[in-house]
Image 1: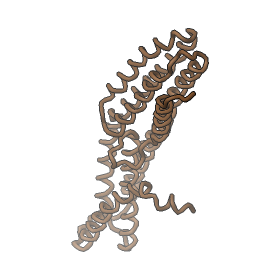
Image 2: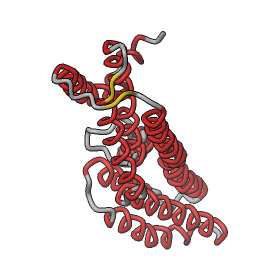
Image 3: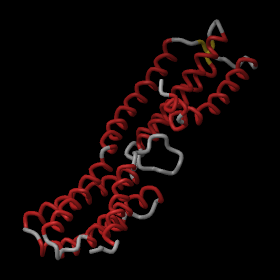
Image 4: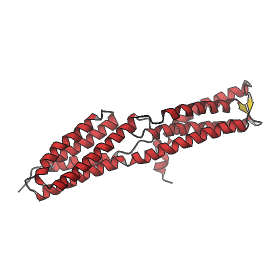
Length: 266
């Protein structure tokens, strides 16, 4: 077992959020038992309620997980589009000694920087849109040194970035499962109440199983919340999309700009 993965706090963050709620539930369960407020006995109807909660949680988890997998690839697609434009930029610079690739490189770096600022610091997405629009002027200057098909290809990459940014913004700012959350909250409250007031012949077993069921329900609820908004980056989510590919690409572009700024000898 990889010790680093085991000790990574991010994988335990949801459980750490749920454990205080589990402690409160167990305390309430013990008080209900001591006060003899257990009004019902575990039967098939309670089992059906717990099964319904499990089904709804599994259904929502499957839907959000599919969306998360789609979102997970978006930063890499943005980087691929930017790197494609930059590769063409450097290729033309190698062919045409009088062409300066610095301006286009700066424009691409600004796009990646804007994406990082919007996602990590919550700045408005209009900054990214402006950076993409400014790319038109840079491509107009670039077009003087290359053929029309190359410009068409780069504009295709530009449109791809714009589409990905729009999808990221909608995923981050739109709650697609609001109605489903309402039903899920009602079912979880009902099932938790049922676990509190139902009794079995062996209280210790009832106490342990009820605690585990409550912990499982709450854990999955928090997990669905995190997966439903993978571009949150506010320090509370354990399932944020990795932006390291965008950061690495941005730093590579900055390094190329610094190299171009160095005085040439000879």
